[in-house]
Amino acid sequence: MRIKYIAILLAASLLLPACSDFLDEDPKGKMPSDGFFTSKKDLDASLNALYSVVTSSQRANNLIGTNFLSGDDISTHPASNKQSLREHDQYDVTDNNAWMVSMWEQRYKVIKAANFIINNAERTPNVSKEEIRQAVAQAHYWRGFSYFYLVTTWGKVPVMLDETIDYNTPLSSIEDIYELILDDMRIAEEGCPVNYSAAPYWQNGVNVAVSQGAVKATMAYIYMCMAGWPMNLGTEYYKLAAKKAEEVIDLADSGVYYYRLLDNYSDIYSMAYSKSNPELLVGLYYHRDRSSHAMPLTDFLLEMKQGGWGDTNGEIKFWKEFPEGPRKDATYFPKVMLADGKLYDWWYDTDPKSREVVAPLFIKTAESAIRGAEFDYADPTPGVSAGEKTLQIIRLAEVYCWYAEATARAGEVTQKAVDVLNRVRNRADGKLSNIYTMAMSAEELAEAAYNEHGWEIAGYYWCGFASRSRDMFRMYRMKEHFEYRKQNPMIEVAPGIFRNEAVAVSGTWDDSKMYCPYPYEDKALNPELKAQ
Image 1: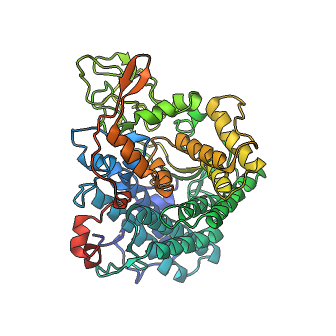
Image 2: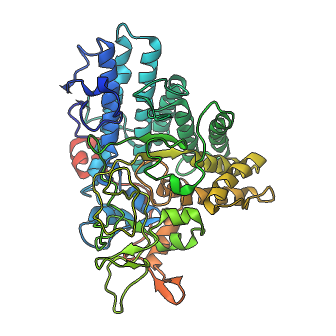
Image 3: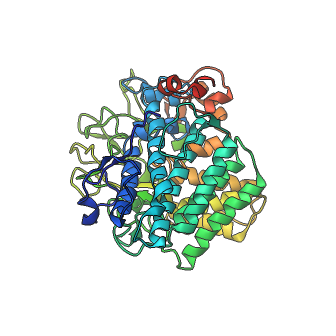
């Protein structure tokens, strides 16, 4: 944890772009707690700085985490400069992985910024208790969020609750870390409002800071992870997950929360709804002029006409099993434009083979070079590398899936669980298909909800929260996929056309592959990490 200070960045990397009072603050640089929190201006600056650190920590895939590649939905390039990505795809991560240290470091930066508020904000004079409570609640949320990321990526980690770094801090157990996470979330749930009343936290008809509903939804998934591997707390915690998800669903259905599903799946990741998505419970908001992220070109192949980095592509088996319909159409590129400017099916190749990566491509993160315009896969104009699409952490459709899955894994099949899962699938199909029924067994409903969530968020890993890889982690399904990838069978992707994955997987499974190793640099600083 090479963290030396909290950077108070008020003119760059901002979550909240529309409030001039926040933008006019002077950068504070290194900010000791003594002499700070002397006015409302300081309180606002500290919270704004926290969101600045959060958005900075999520703005690039070397910061947000590459362990998403252990999921069965996504892969990477077999060569080029993708070694840091490829190690995760191959379940063979080394402690000197060039990107992993950033994954680790960024989480502790957020924790440090959150601790600064948690430990000092209450002494701010001439500020209402409610304003302080909301600020502290948001800090607790992001601290709990960050420890959740750490514990599901590394397992036991050092827990820091103040603004100093002690390199002799012992590792906390997984159980203790989850208790801290839940404590943080309970404080956040109590202190965050249903809706904010004004900018900068309320903009374009949506909450752009953490709200009560966002916390409840987050808790639902945390409980699901506690129910699964490695804690395996089972039925009781699936019931807790279902209860929290149901609270969100009921409050949305009754109109207390404004959240609702968009009518068309294609709208979810569109520019039209980027800043005003009523389905989004937790998001991070960006602006090219201040706080752009590096998302747009990561899913483009290196050889594509529009340019691209070739960081990620879809896995073929997942694509093959993905149900046809509007959701699939909006998830993958319909065609790929290669260097000759012509459009091809993704499986196009010559004989002998001429392309290094022949795989489906996710289109969710693509942005047009013309600001505000929708990306057109048939337009050869070079893509844009600096993005301003909102990063989506939790959507209402995910809460529906979690509720249905948690209810069923607790042993029940209820009409509400069936109904909300049908809401997700009906939109995906573009028609009133209602394929899920009360005749299903609990196991069938649970697996249907698990799969629906995977299809809903396929290839979208930027949130670092409930990606497909984390679903597989909690269900202990990475071993199964590891064995499949070792076999790497050919798959018929079109009549008479067979393709398989470009990245080879080998070796023998052991459960250490479920986690990342501690970064080499930090093991050198902290003897507690080195001893593991």
